[in-house]
Length: 284
Image (spheres, rainbow, N blue to C red):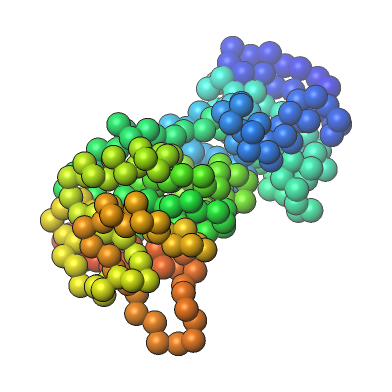
């Protein structure tokens, strides 16, 4: 292993998967280690560049030794070092063990996590926030984050014991939206207090909902959209804080929708007025 010291981070070449630095990075597959080190893994050059541009802190950049002469990789490495991050040049097999993929991305970043608390959520105008009750599936969470980003929602609130938004599977499913959508994590009691003081419309999806999801007037006020747990739905304490319970009509044999699909359907309806307005303005 060779070291090169700079005014910012350090550049190292590592060849072994048993190197202590690599072993430590591999531990980021575990939630406890991500929380202890306040770090997570993101893959792909474009995603990493977008994250840095968005103000996220890059702690370590890894890239395949076979790409050391690639101008784009060299520019990113220079930017990373200047910003204080370490740069590790490694064989593709090392990247494969870190990402657990046979054909890994040639560039991998270790970033500092960012989580909001309740005081950091300040809804205004027609802002939309999504609250997810005890969401368990990382793929669903990642897809919801990507959809929230696409529709222009302001952020996501994770309620209770949930899957980790910084798990590698979740980050992959967001396709980069992890760096665009703020995430807060609140306990159920804290969330209930927060929702009771929401300065707009609190609405939740529920099988017992008596109102079609297209019926409410969402525009003109901030909306807090509460989506229940994938298996058990929304518990009574969360139902009680909803101003209105909505349902998505179903006529087939399926008794429920996938959570990510249901959230997407509702989000586009909640944001329909704002999206139409933004589209008209973009044509002017």
